[in-house]
Length: 187
Image (cartoon, rainbow, N blue to C red):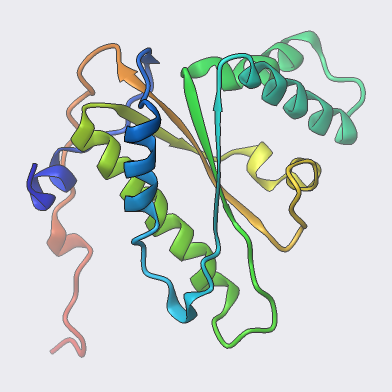
């Protein structure tokens, strides 16, 4: 697949099933991720692949994290948290491990991980897999970061839900480039 065709045809895929990338495919996906721009060669990228019953453990971690803020969660919220990782047969958690007090600002380090995530999505799309990039309250939760071995300064950039699309993704109208691009200075 040509690069431009891949970019223009990639869509988020919310309904995913087996199969997922095998180990060799996952290694290639990671090679693509690690080609993201990286000012200062800080290599802020950290990724966790979660499959099988480990998704249950991740749901339990989400529940414990939410209970830190609200020990009296209602049953529907508890079930939602436990089931979140079960939306797809594989997740990749993308984290920016930020180097503080460096000439490269933290925003550039986080954006580098965002670029790596885009590379992951494009590589998966090229291989015929689907992906959905999600964030939400668990991405902002310091309990989750600590449990995964990171600190509050680090950023969970996304939870990538991965698998084989159950159906073709919906066509989404393309924005008009002229609505977002302006020549500077404008005349």
